[in-house]
Image (cartoon, each protein chain N blue to C red):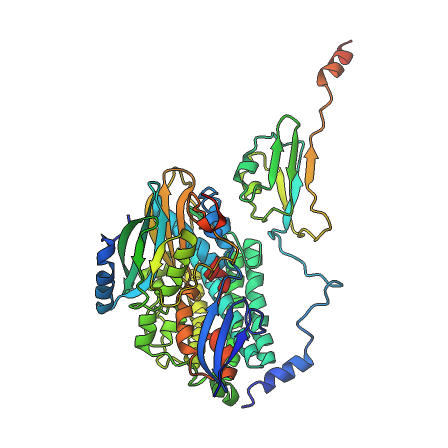
Length: 125
Length: 358
Length: 125
């Protein structure tokens, strides 16, 4: 029920975002949703003259997603947040906090996932 | 020349909420700024997954203490359009009145903090004395001073009687008279202008490509105000967004000051046009599907994404607050400025860090 | 340059804008929500609606024991319990919960009513 949703694959992501920048769209934010069948849906929201346009990609947990912070500088904060709260593997962010921007240094799980992933460092699983 | 790193710590007299910046300096000039946030992260998005959708209004209101009414309004508007509920007209006008009162209170708070940041304490006290009048109105109409809990899915919980509406008109006119004198000090005083003009210039293209929202964008010449889309009763009221061209701290102060006058005019228009009728409708059923709702907060545009799956609890609630979009502009404005201007620059983005980190 | 001089003179000659709290308290308005004052326990039917609708789970209703309990330090003073009670026996008060050394709870128990049948037999005899 959201208007203007375009579903694309991970390889087309950088090209589509570059096209949005040439068309003078303003970057709003990204949303990450944990769906019931083990996949993560990521929406990228853009805005021009108060009308929204949304791009949607769907990845499995652990897949690599390229960062758009070289095209839009303001995306780096939200990509860091998705990386540490959902465990999404985003590569090449301009300023990378390594998973500790919002969470403290001794927190090793990804809190927003419906089932927690515990990182191997703790010696479990 | 060697470089030093100065921490602009989480505790600072000028900041309303904690944020940490590492400033890499050479003599008195800032070369780089590296932010560190995370002092107020409370995990509220996860908490909303454990409560029913009617109880989530109370959680969402408490994300921020300064813009709390608009958070609840965005949540209720999104759910109402997802479930296909039409709220009565009187509820829309009541939401406009409380929303504009919140906008006045937020801008008066910010103007007071700005005056305090360059040492002008008596102006700070003058502005906060006016802010007390606004909070007294909110206590009389809704029950508490800041977190007023009058929104519910389907309308509002309380009504405002005719005598109170007339009293609001009188008090709001008094605030407008007081602001005339304050405006002369902010916009024409020689020492205040010296601290504000030409500091932290952001051109219009840069502001747009960095994603600035709210008064930051409007002070750089971008005409962007979400109230023009006409949610609540704004489609029937008559106003123009306040836009300035220069893009420095002086322009941002001027935009926020003129928005106080605009809010006063909007409140008087809404009180004059208010229809009689019900204040809420009963809501049955559970939400299914996804929706995005956006509202203009005092600091900019807030975006709510909601996903329901047919049960009483929501599947996902995602909130993007305006300060989250304005922090990258701070990282581009700080390099090249003097150390004594850093507190004023950080205050001009209107930082509301508890909104940013939820 | 001398715009604030008028304001300075007005402040010097008028009475102060602050109030000498705690010697002078401000009267609060009629509909101020300070805290949940309590319940008229004799009218309560122990339906439990207030406990289900409380957003912070501060109310506990026990039908077998006929008791109603609230934790005032968890309560967020929203007023939903007072609105949905079918007998309208929960009321809000203007004074706020003061700080305390121990976080105690407020408990109300309904006393058993005297037996009406006995007195009727006495009258008939």
